[in-house]
View 1: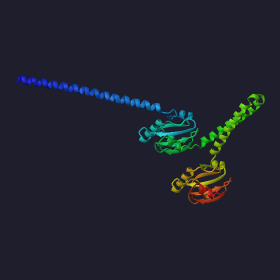
View 2: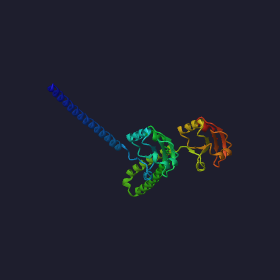
View 3: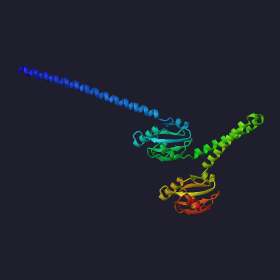
View 4: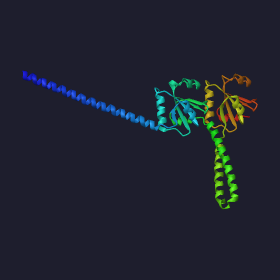
Length: 312
């Protein structure tokens, strides 16, 4: 009986040792798996950082001051799944060289939210070099969606000035070559070829400039009204009006003729203009002359062609 008990105790003790050893091995394996997972996460994180473009950076006044061309503030929150998804797309695809996106911490930027009337995360605000808002929208599926939302009219004007300067430089260069032509007759054929190339390039820029010239659709202001060219039409628009939204969608969708400027007048704000032109309802259009006198007035329009057909 004593031998039996002794044997049982040995078996029990051996079982305890085996269980302890097995648990130790399992614990070590689990720790190794966790460490491997952490290494993989760290690698993914480093890879993500490497993919980030130099023109997608955290917001700071210095970063905003150094940004050029198209500048967009992205109001981002770490706890927002949509923000994380958009940021992932930006890091994955990269940004065009003429676009800078500044990541604004939504939770710590009350001054910027107030300045640009930002009410929710995933808001994008396009600003100019003086930090004035050009355009604002909420959410974007990917980088292409961000680019498609940009208002490039100001950039196009800057491009036009650059091209004008370049054309002037090329004219000066052409004159210099003409002077050299009298002295270096042996190089006349080479210079003629170069002049021809300059003329071709100048023609290409003229063609590009012609493409860039188009009508404008702007928010109403006295300055915009004073600077408008060609036919000027006031569009009395209300944000709460579905018909106004539908007409505006058509205006934005199609390119305006170069001789047409449409100024969007806030129907709820400019009571003086409503009184001046006897406007009784939103979706009213008023064509005015250079002295702001009414030429013609009508209500509603189906599209750009409809607006053009009504202009005197």
